[in-house]
Length: 140
Image (tube, rainbow, N blue to C red):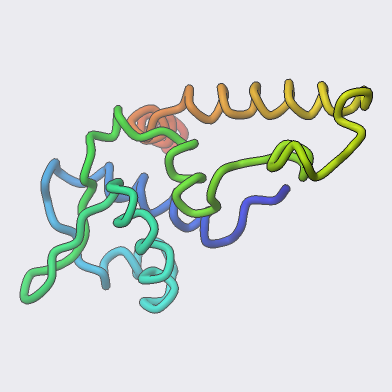
């Protein structure tokens, strides 16, 4: 499994929005400029984030985007699942009827454990924490 470019840009955009003053609407052109993303691609990556209630959009003059939830309440798993759908490491974890070997397959248990641990790690890191980590790395 590889995180798509859309998901990578979605994470970067959410971190950028979280760095702005609370409830401040950010213009699309400013997001595009700072995140080096085209307007069309930004629209594509923001649609699932709006649909899942992570981002809000305002239309019209002075319109743009802002976080719909506090950065402490948004974690990496939320963003990944908004963009990619439910995360599954293997087909046998998507649908138990996909593989007839699940009952005796020794790898199936490993896939389950790895998936559970991956989800724990992604849930552990909030956007607020990612903002703090970025500040530290930039020496701010």
